[in-house]
Image 1: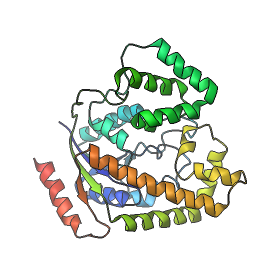
Image 2: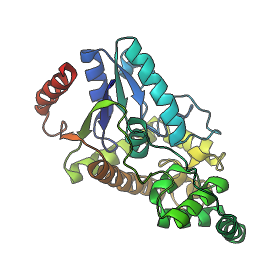
Image 3: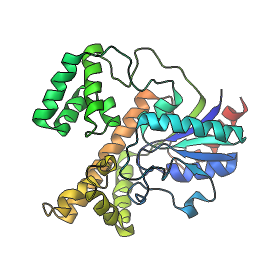
Image 4: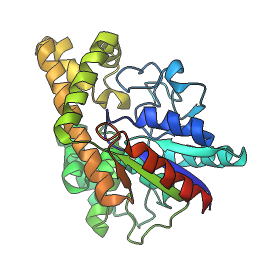
Length: 304
């Protein structure tokens, strides 16, 4: 079974810096496990590492989609597994880094993303009629209430997939993304989770948003404002500025909304990984001496 090192955790907790450090030390190459870093031209709002930060370490699944294109957990699953195989064959260690929990879980386990269940036209037609009457976003909100896992992976304008997910949930009582059977583990993985004290993390998130603004976040947000129908436009750090561009709220209000949504997302990220994955947790921000212990555990796992 191929070994895969995984680094997860909420936004602004130091995943990128640790991934570069360990890649240098262990002969690793990095696969981004982030649903937004795949998009070209969205660098600041997605917190991509620049060329200097990457320090010559190969990075994959970054800048591999145009902003007009969609990207799904199934795409990541297929492309991520291909990269793991290629990196391993070169004698290097694949290091998955990111905070998109569904993507990482579907990569490491044999999740069947989709359902072969028999279709039920009458249920499907009911949801189609609902969408015609109330719109795609209202339909997606319905999915969010019933099956948040599927809603997180499906864009609200992809009516066909939203309808299918609602249909499967109504018929089976299960998410279209979560099979009844426990999916098989595909890799020998060691998962490092980075966390820190909540108020300290929230301060770091707020500071990061302020820094992104200085770096030119508004330019990227304006680009997405001109492409509102794109899946990428729903990313945190972009959609919050749309009412500002329309003259409905102030810039300060938009910035505060970005910070609030980022903090909420960080909380959801932590909850996901705590409840669904086997993670070794470390606080390298406030306890930097934990790095030695972390490295020892990784080396022991590699030597098994």
